[in-house]
Image (cartoon, rainbow, N blue to C red; front, side, top):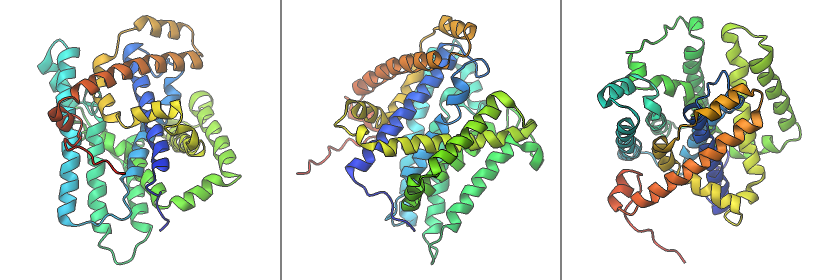
Length: 366
């Protein structure tokens, strides 16, 4: 097995910056849909951005989940699951209730609808991430008991994840009935977990075999090749439509993987520009280390600017303007989220139970 990324400060800085960039895209997407009122079929930016924003987020989570030197025991497995449960579930439930109170006139009707929906009024991400961590932790526990270390188990898990994804997007191939609104898959949001789990495991694989992936990234042919492939895939998705029915998911899924790899390669290649010595690095890293805070709070501050969506709809094929406006408003919303987060963090109780941070002061190292 290749050596993992060294736990150096410089290495982690560009990862935090990339996570911050991804968080901006997540909020920008919600600005497009909820603030501007755009639909994915009309917007110039949404169809492209949606291809890699959430896959990249889960990829990063899986990448950081791998701990090369972690010694798995039954006790540690239980502690890790319980820790993730507290971080992912308690804050999500609290802010979901607050959002339903603020955004909907009838709370109980909204709560009933949110629980039956796989997206949970927007608060599905942390719940699905908990599913992924539990699956991965249990897998890692049993993997650690194997006498011979191999790439086979993690690859099989990735293939299982791809199979679950295929079941959702190509159900007739597997004779899988579409889940009804009251199904367990929707109530538990497992259908969203099935949609993105393979990206989580892919990120984990990249971290496990980091040296091999770095050689691939640095080869002269790799980046030009994937760029050509993704251009053809996006052309077919958005323009050509040569593949019909469920076959359209093949170029779509390929584009999702390649675009997240390109973003990852970009931040790795320019990692010196994303350190704290640079303003852009400090900005993105600050957002990157507060992604949970921003995700939980930003739904409360999304403004209503339907006139902007109307203008963009009337002036189609305006990708740059659509993207810039969405990101501009997203950064303003993120600023308010960070302000509220810092105010709430004054209380050690809120800091611990709303954002999963320890109340114990950190030791200062010389």
